[in-house]
Image (cartoon, rainbow, N blue to C red; front, side):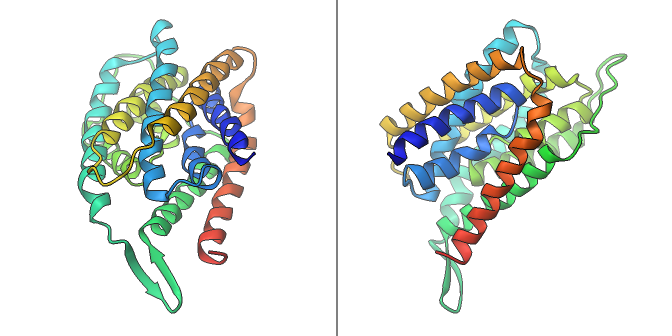
Length: 265
């Protein structure tokens, strides 16, 4: 019965990505850990594939509509791809199984990654709840702030590599502010970046993680269905109005994870 809720949640992951362009991937790891009983370290790896494949499916519709800026995707994506690949190949395997302990409370590698993920959820929720003030001046030729874009791309790549989330809530504002993209084009370009860095990061796994391809395939299929539903709904519903509601849900989930892993584990 719990797995049924897991598949329903998988559809919602895709719906969120298709409808509001970000936030959906932030649910993938909690769904895998708490509804499918996947180890947290493995869940961050599985999430990379699920999120990457789903984003790739969604980006096709944006490509068809001409709402993907390929040059921006390359400039932002290269440092992000390199960072996520190196993080999964070297940094994550280097984290010890027992990180530290305080009295009887032992912080394992799994708990550390879940806590990092929960903190990311809180920041993601805040970005969705607050009223967006991000606007782009798209007049004139596109100009890149290369140093800042490269740094931002690398930081997002490291975060994605550690916790397995796409980071759309970080990428989209960066594309609007630093690359001067219109919001809808930023969403489409963000999906391409998320797809590339997540999938390449997944294949940068050190080989220590057991990959349950059957589970990954099922969750990915449901999420892919969800993203097409989300894209369809985006034509009927203003995703910006739903964003704060989804943000409060993500915030509650983040707080739940922090409490569960620190006080009730």
